[in-house]
Length: 347
Ligand SMILES: [Mn+2]
Image (cartoon, rainbow, N blue to C red):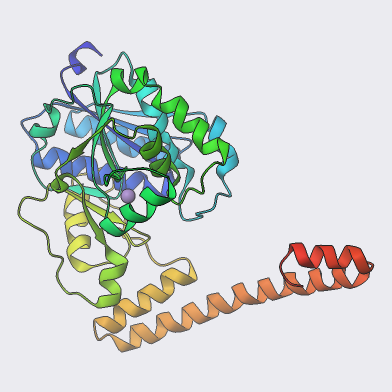
């Protein structure tokens, strides 16, 4: 990969649900930076052949190297049932990347797959990191305050791990990967944002603070609830980060984010893929709210009905499970039953 050394290496960590997001983010980076050389890396613990084929077709069409790295879930496989169920284990891939890319490149830019690029990356590509292991932008103030206290960190800088410019030598020399894995496995802290909390703790004091324009955070779910019609994007914003459960590839997300996403998707390997429709009952409820906010009452009603139907079957399944449990409890004798009930919190 000699010719690839001077290029900016940009890496993503995905599961199947986020692969398209990575592809579209790559398209947005290429469209806005025709003057820069890139090598793209998509890290995953597993993906379909279809996703791989789409990325390699895109790589051929755009004439830019795009590699898929399948990692061994190893140390992280036991976090499948982790506290915050809304995170896939793919969040941990970013911790492993600098080990894989050592010897390939001196620096890498890790980018979340729910980010879209709308400007120039040249300044980041040549930014001097000095002795820092990485550079990142501060997280939303309220989250930062809460997590700094929880992780017993002093100072006021808690970064968002959605975009990390990493100096690979400095990172590996400071053993950030090993120390983050050790911290996550230790159970010493209750990690709300597992990879991000761990990285903030082990790299504390060694991460350079980036201007917020490199990771501008939006909550599309918040926008949906407040029925805000226009996203306020400042002129200097370069990387737009759509955090939270509602993403620009969901059919009921904010029209501005959606149309931006679709315009970049046309230049990706996913051009023919329609927006995702609601699958879970929470998504159906959001979709109903979306239609109500747009004055489309018949559709809103239809989605409320779908939501109720789905939620009811979910609740009924739960009730059936509880009934089975109650019968089990009834068949146990005194002390045993008390113990089981107490440990389940239903005593
Ligand atoms: Mn994100």
